[in-house]
Amino acid sequence: MKNQTLDSIVDTIRNPATRWEGLVQLKEFTDTSQVDRFIYFCDDTFWLIRWAVIEKIGDLKLKKCIPKLFEKLRDPDTNVQKNVQKALQKCSKKDLSQIVEGLVSSYINVRIFCRKIIVNSIENKQEEIQDIIFNSSWIIANQLLHILFVEKKEKLEPFLINATKVRTVQKHAIMMLAIINSERVTSHMITLYKQPHLKRHIIQAISIMNPSIIFPKLISYLSYDNAKKIIQEILIKSDKASIPYIIQSLHNDLFSEDLLYCLKKITITVPMYVLLEKKVKKHPHLSTSINLDQLKPK
Image (tube, rainbow, N blue to C red):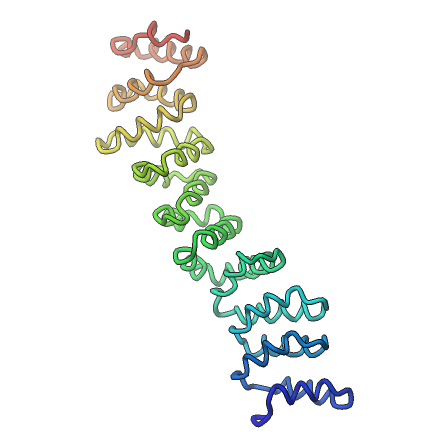
């Protein structure tokens, strides 16, 4: 068998009289040096040769053939297509690096199948996928991040926190943390808000979070002097959504001055004014710093 070439085995398969013998020879073939010939025969005109050679590529785990296997996902023969899928799964079992490249293929069937392999690999290869995210182009990185998020959601929180520090995926990571209402993301949002290109994005992320989670947490950080200006800006830009929580905490002497500044910068609606009146009535000491007439809606 060592002296045989892939070409001679294929010739044996091509001959109807020796076809079965050739298939057995190919099954026993172990030479991994003939990658170019394997790739060549993937395009053979006889479907059975394509089918058998592609199956052998999978058995030998010839990773250099993966780009050709991507092409053969569009093979006209459905039996060949099935073997291509099996071969791709075998070739990528230990290394997903080439499979993730298929996520940006111009062919939708390649993108769909690569996504399927990655999804099926998450339980055993999550760490590898996460490493690839941090070392890939922004297109691939964000597609992988989306796959992980769909599959893992809240379990992905620690990784998403780290991902907010990586320029290629930080915007999506922030939004995903907002979707799962992560309390841990609050302090990171305050830090990231210093980056001008993220300001609008962070305000948008906050707008989709549960306000009863995000705004009390933001207000609590007003106790840190180096965060006050940022938090005030966030509260003001959050506009009407932040008002109930600003009013709720006005009686706290630790925050009252900073929150009153925010309150004066936001247009107060009639319902919120009524809420403010009740707050002042309940905490009379606030009347010395809050002029209700000035804050009355026009």
